Length: 136
Image 1 (cartoon, one colour):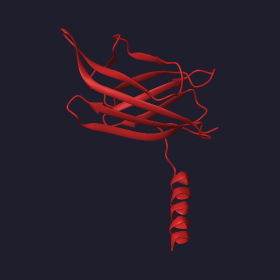
Image 2 (image 1 turned 180 degrees about the vertical axis):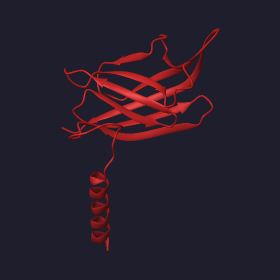
Image 3 (image 1 turned 90 degrees about the vertical axis):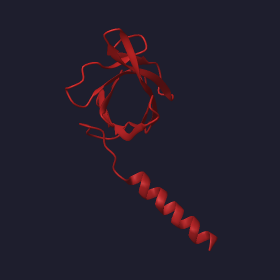
Image 4 (image 1 turned 90 degrees about the horizontal axis):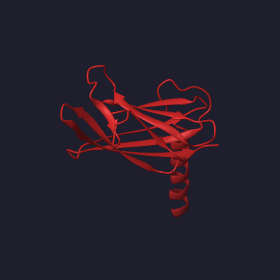
């Protein structure tokens, strides 16, 4: 019985690994498995998992937001940009330093605070957690 359970678990893991996940506009062979989790200040969250190919730009839909990664040729470092999925809200999203993009030095799990622009400064949207798994 134990051997049968082990075989079923192995089959499920193989099927999950082979199931297609895609990022918006990606083509070719997967290079990174990307996991994104947005924890908002009201304690709600959105998440997405997808893959990025050999293209230098990769975009994932996370709830109402598009999360863009622009990879550098030198390896796992990338620029991160978050914007609303619709054109209606120009106030979102900026990072802690007020810029529209954040630079991430490596592919290790990373977190960034996101903010809305307001007339008096900024208001926190939440924290974006992102992790890459190199598939090469």
